[in-house]
Image (cartoon, rainbow, N blue to C red; front, side, top):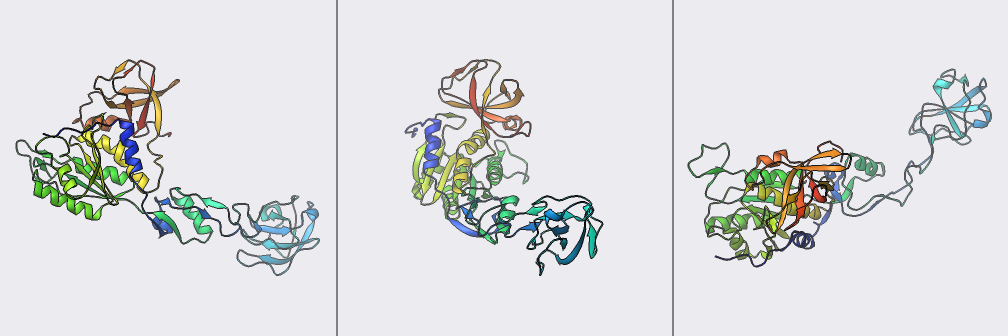
Length: 409
């Protein structure tokens, strides 16, 4: 039986994942298809926006120096959006103007029609006007050449609006990472297919890992559960390597006779970067690379697989897509009672969070076994307790937030 060559500390393993994962190539993508993706480079304004002084309201453009209440103005032209007036305004004159219309020469204010006697060839002003009133100045939004969207920005509706306003029909973004998930084990049965026979379990891992990859913004699909047979596992891994940016397996990477995934990966040219982390749950984590494909061999226990995804695979996916993961904030938390870690390795403790006067109070969700899937449905965060540590009541530790208990992050 082969044992782990070396167990890395959690921080060292995470650093190796990041250092050995490169961003995906950039490509020009139509605006609406770019939503949810990250910019691969800065985007600059092509022109001043607005490109000309224009009216913010429907009303009349005039000279503010003439704008005394009770004065009657003669309307000499009109300026609807998209068609500037043919002439400017002089003393006692006005141009009928609509929202977005170009401010005519000579005018320095716009009065709303509600502050006049109404539409007509002339009108009486009911309220005085000041210079610049109701005028949107050229360049008040952005100036030509200014960086309007920075590299790494996640594209959403507001970013699409700004780019479209500058005439961009597409943006340089990094595509979604392609993830393929493979579960291994002769005991696995497809959910919903049939009842279980003695010794069998339903394959929950591949469903969970695909869901986690989709939540991270990747494209993801699951492959069939491969039996504990070297040929079957090798064929499945080979297929995954041909189409994925990230291959995720669960099970088959520990030190037992049936742990065949790591061997199959190495036979197929996957270079091992590390195997084994001083981390609970998830000690037998494997990370490797073949050309541009990154491979993660996760443990077979459900909680171990899902927690390892959160702490190691998710950061790799975000790095590939050039994004910052703002949905997993790291916060400081404290416990009401002493917490001991007797495992000799970093312990990821599933906790609930409660806001108190002194900060975020963490409480264990209960039993922390690596097969207790229900514990993750109750957890708000994963608190990281160092190896051999005894965290005193009130002492703060770092936690990774999985969901917002108060919707306030």
